[in-house]
Length: 486
Ligand code: AMP
Ligand code: MG
Image (cartoon, rainbow, N blue to C red):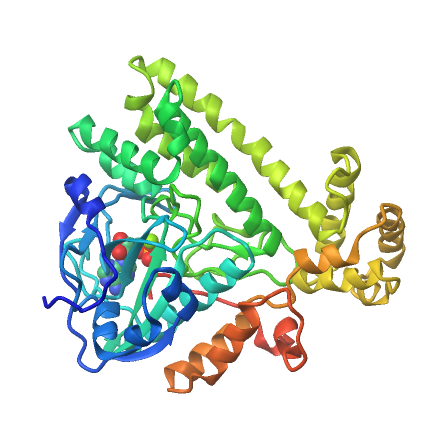
């Protein structure tokens, strides 16, 4: 591997501190690389010159085929419960951690690739990715970031010039992904299976240092780590619920220790409000439906707790009791975050008591469900109500008498229209628009992708010319289906 002439340093901290969880590996060469999209702002935050990244050496870095001296690209090992079934060895089958960078704000970030070739964890997979799904992750992760939801970021997508065989041959691509780290619940499950408890302890120490440094000085640092993860995941899932996001594949290998959303495979945004919303073609039982996400998060965190038990207390029963106590904190933290977010969406003062706000929210949710109201555009329509025009929102309901009664209660709390506009997005990556952009990009036309990115990366800022980006899918778009691992 040649050294790329960039001044950005890429460290090897994970590879050095946790060699038992890392396999040194290199990316596959790309026959005809073409940069499809680059995140200039994120590049700058990471200390890259975006123009350098666009050039031939930069593109080789984004493909992992040239890395700076000092970097040690690795495939990371992890286990995971997939749809409830335990798989002891998953790992990065088609991904590589290039290493860690220090961002402008001083925090450490992982730079990783997806679609960079088969690794020893590939389990028969080709290690590759197609242009469509990699751009999908780029669009949705950047939209989530703009919506204020903690998430991995997308730095670039480079088409490789290689064909990837799926149902049909598709153009291949590599996504460059940036994360606070790629530590997952599944990483702990894998480490807990190691005969040597020291690996688990080093992993926990690494996670504390990178994500939850306050835990280090707690009486029981590993219990404090667990509590911190419970807290960030409760906050995260509340944010998903508030924007109508359905992750779609909440396996334990797709849940981070940092509290960032990771792995944008079959995810999609709900339109008409329905807790049973499922998009993933393989989720036939609705395990990961919109309304099930909080309870799945608790289930996954229980798997994290099991993995941490040897570190929590000498006595197993005592360790279990401690973990159960901490896991019990999820519900209150989640409900508080959800209620705070709903207060903001409804334009209510932050000190509106739960006794008033929570029944108001619950009644509204029931009516949204009953009338199949588009979750995102409803709140902007309601914002007109706070400016004196109730008609845009009233027009969305079947049972007008019930909605009028609700409106009267809401008006009684003097909602703040400007605050609502800051809390309620106009533009989300709607399924039909994402599909439109990906189909065009796969055929070589990047214009719809860039236009969609323009809309969803400034989601609260209503702009003329973007009207169609604010609207739900037309009826003839039909029921939306998404796919994993593509
Ligand atoms: P995901 O559904 O993306 O979370 O992936 C689940 C597991 O399958 C991970 O271990 C991936 O690395 C692996 N995987 C998914 N697609 C491929 C592929 N095309 N080649 C090799 N491994 C893959
Ligand atoms: Mg995954």
